[in-house]
Image 1 (cartoon, rainbow, N blue to C red):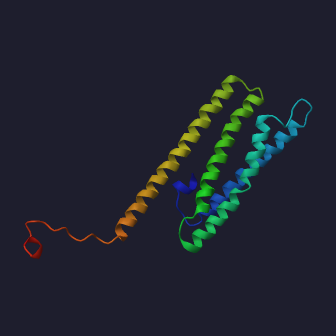
Image 2: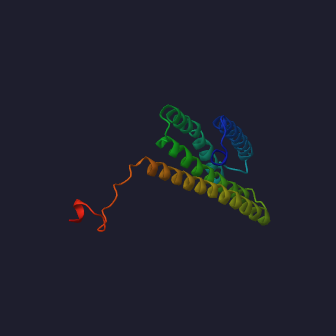
Image 3: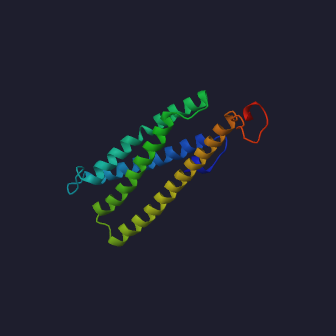
Amino acid sequence: MMIRLLKFKSLVLVHAGTQLFSYTLALAGLGLGVFIAVKPSYRLDKYHPVIGLVVVILLLFQPIFGRIHHLINVREHRHSLWGTIHVWFGRVVITLGIINGGLGLRFADNTRSGEIAYGVVASIVWIAWMSVAVWSQLKTNKRTEDTREKSLPSPPPKWHPMQVGEEGK
């Protein structure tokens, strides 16, 4: 969301730093989950731990996609397929992580009110995040459309029957 809302010179570095910090938290959560799951009463073959492992593994690809996109963007001054992959892959994986957070509450026998509170807060955050994404995309599309219109040559003036000249005879 930071990339869509803020603009300053080292924004990519701040984005990378915050994502690295977030990934570190995800790894800590994974480690804690594995620590708890190795106890005899828990198993790693349930839906929540499996989805959590998949999310953390998939997140390993995000910096690769982002770096490839950044290198193309710097070199060619354009967006690339890698940027689209980076953005949408991230959105899908983070959404899966948010859903898995709710599933984890059920897995941990949390209270019903705790599950509802998580669902409400997670939904509000997700809707705000997607709203910024849509707003940003619409803004980008408008800017691209305006740039295209300015770069196209003006069409020739249309002939009007009231004009005097060769065309009117």
